[in-house]
Length: 78
Image (cartoon, rainbow, N blue to C red; front, side, top):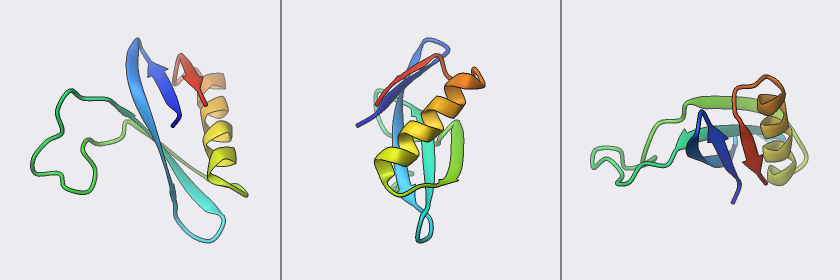
């Protein structure tokens, strides 16, 4: 699973398929305990990038590289 660092905070990277070849890549902070009222996602995403890719790995790498170039995240591990 990919990880990212945003302003010194460790973040989880979630990749979900929107439509046939469209992917949503979310960067969300890792909280110590998930909130009880959020059943689908344990915490909200701070950044969401939607893009067209052949695979989830390609979508994650492309989105994380784009976010790093824009200085929205400090670094990532794919």
